[in-house]
Every structure is written in C-alpha cells, then in structure tokens.
Image 1 (cartoon, rainbow, N blue to C red):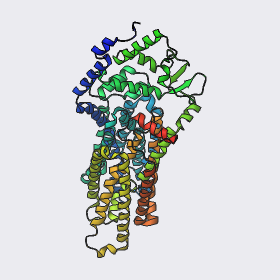
Image 2: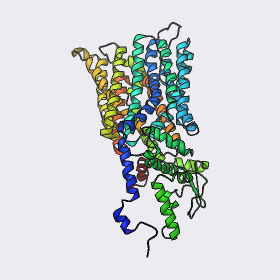
Image 3: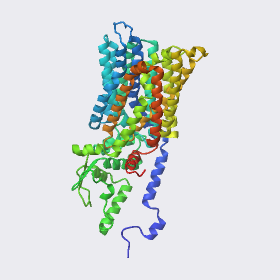
Image 4: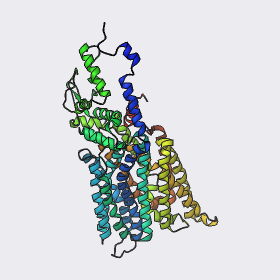
Length: 567
C-alpha cells in the first residue's frame, strides 16, 4: 500500500530530514552571534535600571552624613537634632518604604516594568531638592518620607525587570551588578560628605534621577509582561533587542518557551470545575492519537511542520488569547489574568508563593539583624566608640569602598559558588567577625585595651572584614532570590510584599539600635547581632535551595516539589 502521509523509504535514505536541516541552519546562525553581542543589550538594559539603585545607595547613605552634622549641633539655618530625632531620621525612610512597595506591587502589572521604573525617579528628584532648600527639621523629615516612599516604589519593578530580561546564565551576575551601583552610591555620598556640606551634596545628587529617567526611556519593556498582556509582536521584538538585536528566527525557541510559560502562568478555569482544581496543560490541547482520523493526523503533521519552519506565529497568537476556543478540545477552557477574589487569595496562598516568601523574609530578617545595616546611619558614632585610629568620616569612605569591592567580587563568585554557598559563607563569616567586634567593644569600654599596643587597629580590621562579607553575600543574596523565586502569576504582588517586609525589618533594626546600645552597651548589642547571624546560618543551611543557573520555570518547580515532599 502506498504511503501518502510521509516520505518513502528511498527518500528517508537519500535525503536529510527537513527539521534536521533547519536545526543545523539555526545552530550555525546562532554560532555567528558572539556571546558578547548576546550579553551586551542585557548589560545595557540592566545598567539603565541600575541607575535607580545608585540613587538608592545615595539615599541610604545620606543620613550618615546628616546626623553627625545636626546631632546636638546647629546648622547655618539653626537646625538641630536631638538623640530621639536622630534615631527617627535614620529610620523613618524605612517605615515609609513598605507603603511604596505595596503600591508598587499593585500598579506594576497595569503600568508595566519600564514605565514604573521611569515614574519612580520623580519622588527622588523632589526629595533631593527639598533637602537642599530645607531650613527646618520638619522639611528634612518630609523629604525623608518622600524618599522612603520612592525607594519602596522602586523595589518591585527593579527586581522583576532584571529577572525577566536576563538569560539564566547571566541572571546571577547581573543581579550582583545591580548591587555594584548601590555600593557606588554609598561611596559617592560618603566622598561628597568629606569635601562639602550635606545640603550641597543633596543638590548634586538631584541630577541622578533626571539622568536615570532619560536612560530608561531607551530600553525595552520585558517580554514576559508584554506576553501577559497579549502583545505578542512587541514581546518578540523586545526579546530580539535583548538577545543582541537579532532577527526573530534566532530567538524562536526561547520565545516559544516564554509563550508557553506565560500561558501556563495565567489563571485557568475549566468550564465545569473550580479554577484551581485543574491546571491548563498545553498537551491537553493537542488531539489524541487514538481518536484522530487519518485526515486529522495529516493536518496535525502539517501544522507541526509549519511550527518547525517558524511559520506558525498565528497559531501562537490564537493560543494566548483569553477567550479563544482551542480546536480538538474535549472541554472548553477559559484562560485569562482575572479571577474572583476567593480564587486570587487561594492562588496567593499556594506553596509556590508562600514558601519563597517565608524564605526571603527570613533571610531579610537575618540581613538586617546581622548588625551592619542597623548601624549604618550611626557609623560615625560607632567608629568613634570602637576607638578607630583614623578620622571616622574617612573611615566611612574606606568602608564604602570595601563594600564596592565586595560587590564586584560577588559578581565574579556567584556563578562559581552559587547563591547558597555564597549566603552560607557570608553568614558564618559575619557571625564570627561580629563576635570579634563585640569583644573589642568590651575591651574598649573597660579600658583594658590601653595595656595592649596598637590594639585600636584590631577593631578596624575586624569591622572591615565584617563589612566585606556582609556586602559579599548577606546583603545581596536575598535580593537575588526575590528577583527569581516567585511564579510569574503573583510575582509583582509578592515582590512588592517581600520588599515591604524587608523595609519594616530595616526600620526595626535601625530604630532600635540606639536603644539597645543604651540598654546592653555596644558590646552587648553586637553580641546579639552575632548570634542572629549564627542562627541565620543554621536556618539557611536547612532551607535555602540553589537557584543559580536555573530557569524561572525550574525554580518554580523546585518549590512546588518541596510542597509535595518530592524534592
């Protein structure tokens, strides 16, 4: 009987299959595109976004140069801080940031990642100008509140943007690259604080949000967000830009995976059952081989061949439409982004959401109560109390350069060590070094250090190592995790919530430092921070998975498997 549905035996033996030819052609085309060209647009897009993190570092560092200038001292305009006002100024931005983070999580989906990143520069520009023109402490506090809201609003779009534009092989490096800008923001403010007054520093800083706004206008929206809103052509164009300004054929394989992931991430509701008792499976939309007629099989084979040739874009468009019927389906399925409130709450409470949230919030707790972040607004005072043998203002510059160096090394080592080992190494090191700081604080308080030659350099060196490992992993890894461990459906909200909770913890850590120091002494509070890092090491050793080099879908499955006790 003549075979009409496929190639003859002679054709099979004499001709190379069409799919194999096309696969080879695509591989050759991909080889012609250098790895640098593929990485460059991702680096450029990340750099534009990272300008916001430069502003963030400047915002976090600014109280460090303002508090010593106004604490029990009068400025040119008669402004003065009491100890209580100083503690509030050092922490008030953190308690305002959760409001901005929650708002960011709400508007991020309708507004988009790119436009959210542009809008966030407005409160920072206003805040810096208010600092410059301030003549009362009330104006300073209002500016700090505005800056805090702006910092909170920036977190969700910053975190989700880099996670959605990068290849898995570059994601860890580019997230670390983000921390580089934050660290440089610290260096920039501390350096300006050494050569000019804090109000002139604020005036210079106001230029950064303006430049950042212009830079972000030149980068594309993320393909994932565009796909989630049904803008297929724009998503494909964005991906082509991000993978080296290439033609659509070059990114077809990755693009098809994104389309599938985007569709699987949407709310799905079978006609006769609850929305979350059954998941949409793309394989279910294909006709069964047992029930197909020969003509249907032929049509299916032709369709698959068209897909292999890159000629099935229209079919992809049909697949992602929310109310389109899929041919050969046994059950009508509605796919879309909207769900009832009950379904929404149930979705947010699933293990794939709750387990990552608990993990990163726990990590944020140990990050803030490791001590370095809590003491940052009061570094001048802490360095003086520890008896550093050099000017405390100069010490802040040295420490900020140390932070910058640690961040650069984090970029290098995260790909080799992975995020898990990086986190465990830095937590253990911070615990050991903070115990050392506690010991020398005790010696300094008791006056015993006077009998030992040159002991003043010991606390400086130990604190230097402490700050290095804090910036090397403790302060960077949780933000890396936030950018990649949440499923797309709910990522915006959960990212905003995680950032909000992190700043609540930052507020608690910075606000309570002076009170704890008065209650326990500097030696006691640093011993408490060292114990916190030790506990953090034990918990992260037990629960922190490795995510480096994995796709977003693989990471999501990791937490899903854990919920089923299969991992």
